[in-house]
Image (cartoon, rainbow, N blue to C red):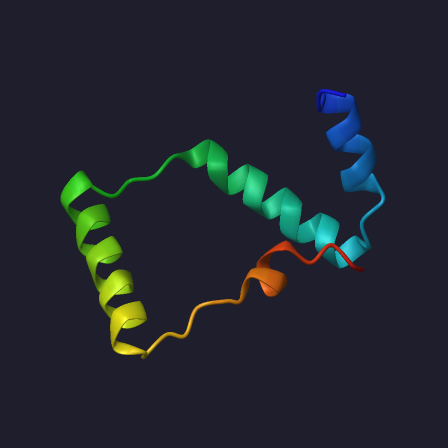
Length: 70
């Protein structure tokens, strides 16, 4: 079944209030657009990659990213 706006809204409304607030902020922030230049974005991505490679940031395990339990 394709995901529709109605399905997404129903799932969002089923979230606890704090998670709905986080989602609302994320959606509102996405309307403002990213003011960074391509060069700034590239620099941040390079920094993040170096942190992962060096072990300074261990990242997240697959289960942490895709765990759907409440």
